[in-house]
Amino acid sequence: MKTPERIDLDVKQLDALLKRVKELLPPEDYELIKAMADTIYLLSQCVDNKAASIRRLLRMLFGATTEKTGKTKAHPKKKNSVKAKKGHGRKPAKNYTGAKKVRVFHDTLKPGDNCPECLKGKVYELKEPQRIIRITGNAPLSGTVYEMQRLRCNLCGAIFTASTPENVGEDKYDAKAKAMIALLKYGTGMPFNRLKDLQQSLGIPLPASTQFEIVDQMAMELTPIYQEFIRQGAQGDIIHNDDTTMKVLSLMKENKENNPERKGIFTTGILSKTDDHKIALFFTGRQHAGENLMDLLKRRIGLSPPIQMCDALSRNVPKEFETLLANCLTHGRRQFVDVLQSFPEECSYVLEILAEVYKNDKITKEQNMEAEERLRFHQDNSGPLMKKLNTWFHKQIDQHLVEPNSGLGQAIGYMLKHWEALTLFLREPGVPLDNNICEQALKKVVLHRKNALFYKTEHGAMVGDLFMSLIHTCNLSGTNPFDYLTALLEHASELSESPDKWMPWNYKSALIEPDNPEA
Image (tube, rainbow, N blue to C red):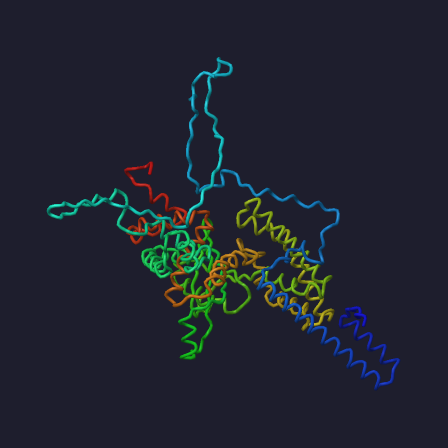
């Protein structure tokens, strides 16, 4: 049987069709055709909504790959467009900031020597040396076995053991080993058991239980710096927040045994921004994003309400503290991406206008505009676009050009309901367009959840929150997290005295001793 061709009718077209049918056919035939038309229309709406839900599910499972305007089916690439050539994958030597550097001098010449070619000039050193890179491999954690010679007197039986070499230390696991375990677990999502198997195969055993004992002890030593992260994060000018579900076995067991009123378990991601720095914070437990943000803002000291960026869920907003609420424009845009195949013309119109708004924001970043200058630029260039979009939204609803319960109608309804929060960037300086930076931070939590699956206890979750906060803040500030964690462990006794001197962006200054400026 031939597949019937799909015909898209809006409400007005359907009403006009039924009106014509009513004039031509008897009342009983009209009622039959009207019931059939209503059924078909209802089914088509259900199919469209189900298709949008399936697309959202696929995006959750496999990630969004076609949300960019230029990659949607409604915006196909031009056939004669030239595809950009891919890079060869090689990185310049300057990118290897963590590599050991070995200075190699010329075999026979030094600056000031006579030129061996012309015999008249003198050679001088170029500013940029020639660089070659050699990469070696080894186990994530390597070890050294020190075999101290032992001697025994054949007469009295006294045993004499060689002295332990200097700089060996008393701890079996040094600061670098501990930092690597924490970084692999909470920075890259490698479970303890997987690292245990890898280390065992490489001849350096490292039990999973030992790994947790190490990071647990580290967390105790690094608690002062984590509390400083929280203190400084509370003072942010712009605070992003969102959460994702998490499994904590002890809380799940409590759900089964005690049946508490609140059963949800979340990890909240909070990203606090000031003019100079970004701080990432994670909190796991029964509290949702708004409650965790409220606890954070309790530490705020005599400042005006911060700008809060989040999606439109009510649980993201703190109940007891005032914020300048901004909603994520990407969430609103995504509503139209989900129903693009069902309403290609209308959704394309919305996506093209929002694309222009994002182009304007890109210009402000490229030109490093100050907050006030950026606000004026958006008011002049993005304001008319958003006003045009608002007018179009109201026209679709007021003139009944779209069914309110359809996928498109719901997308328009979402935008109109949250319009003030979605357009705060046109009224307040410094307001971001979206919450993408917080969603990116939560990917660390998702990575852990995919690999390790769960936390065993609330204490284990707290340890994970601490290290994810430290590691992701390092990533945001361009600091090497391995070097940072190592430095904190090597100076753990100094953290509680002045933790503000040991943040990722200034800890190197604290490492310089007054009597050794070259340290």
